[in-house]
Amino acid sequence: MIDLLAVLPIGALRGGVADVLVILALLLMTVAASGLVLAKEPVTRLHFLAPASTLALPCFGIAAILAQGPSLGSAAIAVAVAAAALSAPALTTSIARLISSAEAGDRSGERSG
Amino acid sequence: MNIWLAAVLVLVVVGLLPAIYRVATGTGPQRLVGLQFASVAGLMIVIALSMAVGQSSYLIVAVVLALLSAAGLLVFTRLLATEMEGEQAADDHAADDHAAGDQAGRP
Image (cartoon, rainbow over all chains, first blue to last red; front, top):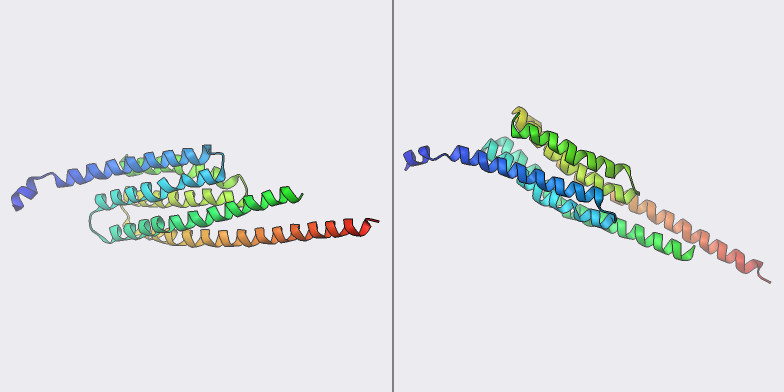
């Protein structure tokens, strides 16, 4: 069994998966950035933050963990990626609330003015 | 050039530049969208740079950036909300004064 595991190209497979995940993360970031620049409405722009923070970032973190192997650095990557990915929806909600209240204030200002 | 160094270059062009453009234009709340995108791109850049040069000690920067960027964004939203409430109250006060002046001047 141990001989069989030694023969299997697990290291190469791990590197290949890491490369695929890095490329996927970069493609997702490209899509999110183009939407962020091209979208006209502020709330529409907010929707393009989700693929970057909840898909691209975890993909990139998993790729880095796979490439590095089990170590303290991998734990640091996991903590950083988890903190950013878990806090992103709350931050997006608070920004959306702020943008909608600003738009409501502008509308009421136009109505009274 | 390994894939991590290429990822750094791609992330600077595709991630940081649009984020800086979005941070530099628009109203205050709209700029926060760019700030959050910049923090995500910056986190990925630090991780990729650490992998590219093989220095795992750089990853402490990524941990601190992830924790502080979330707190910083929340502080910005709170400050901007307070500022907008103050402006709204000043506008309402000015509109009330204007209406009262119109009524006093009417015969």
